[in-house]
Length: 144
Image (cartoon, rainbow, N blue to C red):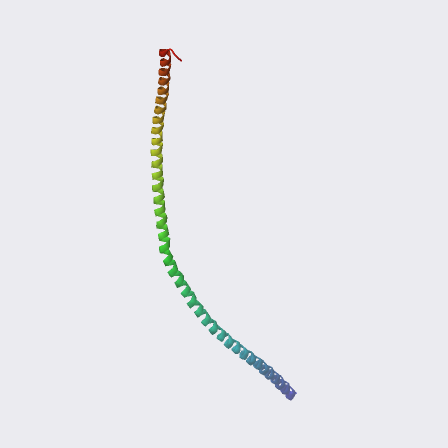
């Protein structure tokens, strides 16, 4: 029975060795596939890294160009602001001039109204005086 036990133990050990060997073969295949995947991923990362560097270079160029154009537009915006200030100042001067002219015109109109009232009064007085004179002539002459 001792021999039988030793044979059973040897068979069990043989089965264990076969199982471990198969497990190691599967593990070796898995590691090989993992190594290939990592190698493939490494290639993709390198290609992507080059594209990202090129994209960053392009983005930096665009940002630099935009910065130059913004700097150029700053002068234009300042010029437009100064032009707006000049137009506001000119508009204010035109309003003041128009107001002064309107005041002068109103004062002149008032003077002309007074002169015309006096002239109208004088004309009315002249007409009355002429009528009176023509009535006196009729009475004096006794005719008409």
